Image (cartoon, helix red, strand yellow):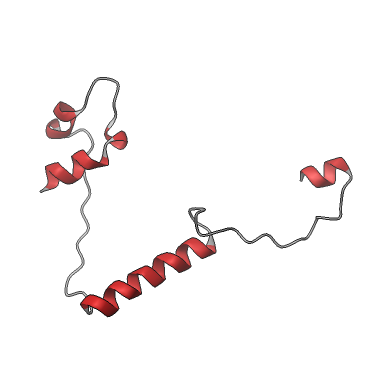
Amino acid sequence: MDAVQAGDVNDVGVKVILPSTIYGSQRFYSEAFQDAMAIVRYFGKPDIFITFTCNPKWPEIISALNPQEQACDRPDLSCRIFK
């Protein structure tokens, strides 16, 4: 968009490939898939898949937070409280 406004249309339509470090890019998901398949290849197919939803307002989490912190700032607390 900036190139069009500046009148430099030489770069318009040029394909941009985002690196795997950009969350949500095709290379990011491709690398995540390859990592998951490497784990399956090493350990074998999983027997069970568990997901867990945590409420950031649980008293255990709130009491462990420092003032001015939010639960999203401390994912380590959620993991520790779940154990």
